[in-house]
Length: 348
Ligand code: ADP
Ligand code: MG
Image (cartoon, rainbow, N blue to C red; front, side, top):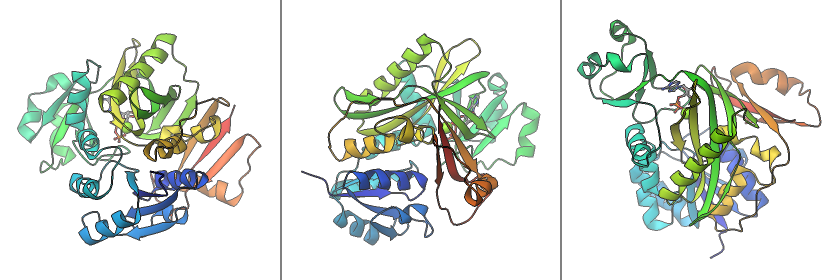
């Protein structure tokens, strides 16, 4: 079946970039989002504003589309599962359910014999008090976290009361890794053993938010190879269809750890728009819509910086950019502190 109408759940910048990529491939996009001001409505063909549990709107959306995908992982499983009864959802809802839960995600990765940080499930305050061994660590909500939200760095047990942690939620406590570097590998899987993979990307964070990504990553050959092999293995084991990102830590002894998996296109892959013949967004659309798989070719080394909060203002007022630079404004309604407003990619 040729796919003409792609439904996308979520209307942020990733949704915008997916819609632009689909447009290039003559695929119409219908975006469903619970934010009335979602920036992606400016890039798609049709926009539905409704909460993710609005069953009437979910049916209306399903009727309009041939296939459904999503731009973020924090979508209720029930919503994806209901939709999947009406039209195929890719990546599969079961994959999203696994990955959106930090504990299930890490258990899955460990079962593949792939190293993660050390972690433990925390269900109440008492659980925390015996875990000296995991400190310094980071307490993370098991679900719904992103951009460092829902995370508490903990250095010592005495600190816990002053953090006002809400124990109605469940957490994992992760031992802090002494980081040398962070990298990510983006892969688009089409079907059994058919995939396109991008080279590892080196990432720097500020306040747990991605600030800069670049290729090539300055890592040794072994890490280069191992990170790609692990990403391929994870995608194959999940029988994944679409674009997936694996975030890795590298410690001071050059040990590689999987930090987390994103079942979607990823911020660190924005540079693929300009640095490759086919971006992570176009590859995602190609994979979920069963379009042709085209061999990836790198065009250039590149660096991307996120413009966060009011860092966007000077670029909006006077985008002093060179021929090798590409400025993206996500056209979000309001500038907010810590909100990703746009990015700048420089080809090197
Ligand atoms: P998010 O879902 O918000 O992306 P992450 O678990 O990826 O959450 O954490 C965000 C960032 O915080 C990481 O990219 C890393 O810089 C830092 N961080 C998180 N966990 C650890 C850890 N166990 N050790 C060292 N740094 C960490
Ligand atoms: Mg992360």
